[in-house]
Amino acid sequence: MSEREAGHPAESADGIEAQAEHFDVVIIGGGLVGASLACALAPLMERHSEACSPQAPLRVAVVEANELSSAADMPRFQPSFDARASAIAAGSRQRFTAFGLWEAMQEHATPIRTIHVSERGHLGATRMRAEEIGVPALGHVIPNAWMGQVLHRRLAELSLAWYCPARVAEIVVTADGHHLMLEDGRQLVAGLTVLADGGRSGLKERLGIHSAAQSYEQHALIATVEMSQPHQGVAYERFTSEGPMALLPLAGRRMELVWTREPDDAEHLMTLPDSDFLTALQRAFGERAGRFRRVGQRHTYPLSLVRASEGTRPGLAVLGNAAHSLHPVAGQGFNLALRGVTDLVAAIEAGQARGEPAGASSVLSDFETRRSDDRDNVVLFSDGLIRLFGVDSRWLGHARAAGLIGLNLISPLKRLLARRSMGIER
Ligand SMILES: Cc1cc2nc3c(=O)[nH]c(=O)nc-3n(C[C@H](O)[C@H](O)[C@H](O)COP(=O)(O)OP(=O)(O)OC[C@H]3O[C@@H](n4cnc5c(N)ncnc54)[C@H](O)[C@@H]3O)c2cc1C
Image (cartoon, rainbow, N blue to C red; front, top):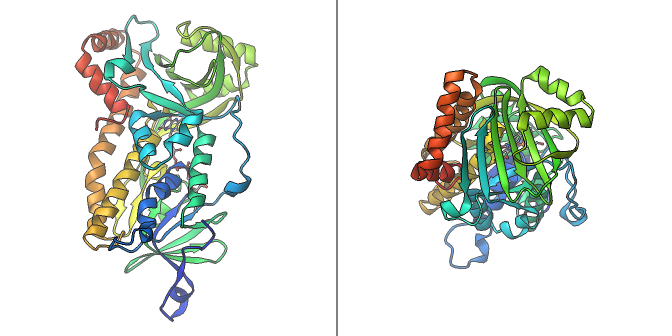
């Protein structure tokens, strides 16, 4: 990968078009989702090595605003106590395997063997165990920084154009796709533009794609904690009247805490000395996972359910946080986005087989058809989970507890719920 390596100056002699670099696909944003898409497109970019392939290799560019060190000078990854981590479902592991990335990812991946869901003040608890579902692990927890390094190392091996640091400042619709203006004056022409910019750059709005945002009026407080006992690969989801909590297993006795609270409470928890914070955490979480011994740096994130009004247009696809941002307690956002990545690559490949370019309307409507049910189901599932457990009513509480106990007994339903959480079932 080198800057502009795969760019092809336009044949056309007139004006702007002539100065621009032309691509079949331009990915705006080289974060977890944009970088995963670029890696997933690798087989379509490398077609030229297959002499018998009738299709031309796909010309791909990634534009990323934040400077990243080149793969050669990336430091050896040192897991830090404070590193942010994500729960990666079993289905995402299958996808990373298909992209040739899992072997590297698993170096710093902690398997989730059991998911334990409970509600404070109620007896019910449900456990999903990997062996009951027939899989070696329900998912894995991987530090985000490590996922980023693995993805960017792979990008460095691919023949794509990498614009970084570079920010797309303007995007103009053309007859065959989009014209992209970078802040530094460079220009790109894209048959298919993929918005994987996290949704905060304003590009979506400039194209007239609006977002419906519903605030949960909660903040997520994230920190790494150290426990008094080994976690045995258990991930906990605990619902309390103040908001849901999740504890995810990390290396050693460390766990990643996601604690949702009302904004004022979260701010207050941020200001507490470590010992007072640990006491408050112990009181809220109970003793199921042992004693909380140590806490690292704390961060908060305001939570809302955000959905873009459109996921596709001719020549445009919206992916990742730009398309949907979910409550993090169910750990679904990136997993859902990775399924979108796979579906987009499948739609492009199917289009190529029909002789259609990546940005063709038929390719994007195929992608939309593949996506829409999954996206709607996951939004309903994670939003419903938060709302079901977010209401503090005594009767509802008993009903929920009965539901949890019931779920523990009715294994086909539990298996379905687990397989959906793992991203295996849609
Ligand atoms: C607290 C928390 C915990 C979470 N835990 C989980 C979990 O356990 N499991 C899970 O599946 N999901 C989880 N998620 C969701 C997950 O983090 C997101 O789905 C994921 O990070 C989205 O990645 P993205 O690449 O779409 O966006 P981003 O990570 O925001 O990346 C966007 C990229 O675009 C670049 N960019 C922006 N504008 C421009 C521009 N104009 N030009 C060029 N580049 C641009 C940015 O620099 C950035 O690198 C969690 C989310 C939160 C908030």
